[in-house]
Length: 343
Image 1 (cartoon, rainbow, N blue to C red):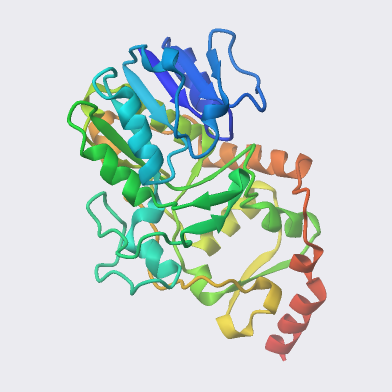
Image 2 (cartoon, one colour; image 1 turned 60 degrees about the vertical axis):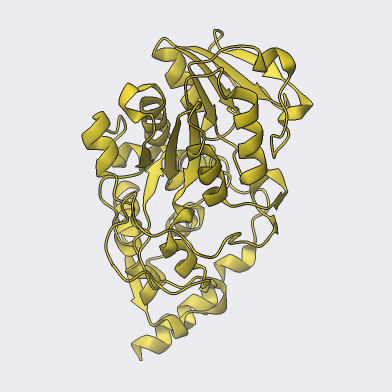
């Protein structure tokens, strides 16, 4: 298949491109050219300043080509979704929209924007979506792209699924971790383990909260499968692990991999020291039901959980955050809480 990947030189894009190439597809990646990661020599690069986020333009030569699949990794909202539809409708076989689990109402509840959805349990692809649009506001500074304007994956999805001459596949991603993760999702836990902290504090509500994660290589494999499988056109798929553990269970599992001998201590939320508190409202799990992609497309993770954790730990240890905030590791305050609770 001839496949165009828009924005494929980052954390998720690189393993996706490698997998598509290894599967024998003819792959083109469209990007700004700010950096060129190590990719198979057969991957074709198309570089243009038009590829700046949000991607609102495409070179004429690229839009005159015909692709079997266009995979857009950088869709943020309505404007860039409309731009890719204008560029490739009627000339490409399918559009793959990389969306997010943040479209669900449970995410709105996590941010405190709306009440928790009435039906507990794992979220299927038919679960209620957020009623509040622009969850971070119309302008929001987040991630490697700087200021995001009008970010909302719900709007991107709406545009894509309304175009009959460019069938869409919607992929709702979990929290993705692994080598190259700029969010360093597990770094603070790993640092505490490496600092020989024998007790790890979690607020009780966060400790029991379930939030679906996915190792980056597994997410890339699921994306490649959904992008190339004929039965995926017109479908929405949740991606991520088969079973979502609680935060406390995930932390303990990570500790087992690195042979950490400590203990996870859930405590009342109000007892947490200030540096461990966050503004989230853990009132409804953000656990994605990923059975559809497994049953309909036959998806299986190529990397087991333990191996994914090991690769992540190795990378985090050798690539710590450059802007590490030492106040996040106020061990004296944590010890004072533990001593007071034990007395």
